[in-house]
Image (tube, rainbow, N blue to C red):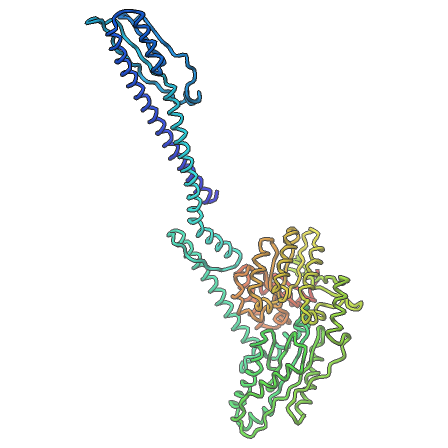
Length: 633
């Protein structure tokens, strides 16, 4: 039984005892009072009438008339004149049957008033005894009326007490409700704090829960920070702090293969020349200062575009990858402008230049070919007389511009030309955790992956339309067989209030299928839209729908910002997984990541697994699931 019900039961019992006792005591007191009054009336009337009879002599007719007159006017039940030996000489008895109150009440509360007795004398000689009993009908009527009034007042007082008690219980238990909410939130891996109530007992409980939440959150942040330090040591260049060559290439390869808008963009390489001469003439310290200034200029673009990626390919080459950017020249010119702001006065007459080469890329492009295109453009820029970024000539696309894509995409939406691909996510025992279902769209009779069409949908603002279509296909595919399906939602969709409302409405109509639905949110999108994601998680949690991050790991140090969302799983990006069996640094990072995920109740899943050896290594590190080209059912 809940505390509120117990408090209510206690209040009801106490009110019943108090009001019931008051009612009984009031009734008993009134009854005793009426009995006393009737007894006094009987005595007084008997004495008065006996005195009158004593002066009337022994004429039977006169006595009879006097008794009849007194009986008719005095509301008596009985008047009896007895002789000296107790025999009845005269008697009058009322024949009124109305008791003055309900008969059950008369039987429950009987009124017994003692008879009034007085002696009748003839001179100095006693001639008889007069017995008088007043009728109780009026006493019962008065008692019944009084009890009804008392009952009415008590019921009114009980109603007022109930209203006050309800208000008081809500006020008393409100802090308890917040404590319960906090406990449930901690159980759901959301380490929130609540205001400590004024009630001493609840304040102590709330303080203990807040301390627990703070300790767990601090532990999470401390471990996340340690892992972030380890990741930077493994993946970042020690001088500039940018990604080193191999980690950058791993991230770039995984970006190009992703099924979202980030699968298309711009790749830019900038070179510091002549770095060898600077190192020879001015020393390594001066060269390092120039490299740091160059890295700062390249990295400055990430302040405005946190999804972009920058690294150092070798001693003099810096690379920038701009997902979702469509104009290579604009990105290259922006980087050129930032590099032009570097103070070169400490380097004397050395002709320091920053040649830049750039190219656009699309989903499925080969990274080696893309790097070769940019290297060629960089070589041309290095040989040019003026510092102008050189853009690699891109092959002519099948669909030349946004207007043409708008027509093709509208036709696909009209024809509902969508389907879901299927990629299993398996645990260590080979059991399917869920099936990833990225959407495919038919464009000119070719089923294109989402990575091809999503950049254009993003520019048109149609990503919520695609995600809505994927949701319909997934729910239609959940036929109650127990198989769990996973779809991807873009950051643009979760930021759209209309889409969130439609998603919640659809899932509430089909709660059985909603329990088998998993939803992937890109890590970068989660940090761009934390408020919208929090609202979505809160709305979908009661439905049993699981929400997690995909392509994750790059922003692991910020995972504490999302600790209170109630996420269910964490999918590590392919860049950290590739060749994991031969990479001790990434192994240490993923082992710690899996421990942190398990500590806060998250399932850790690896993306982009290409071989059975990678899968075995990942399971040995503590990850719970794997998916990718090398994973089969």
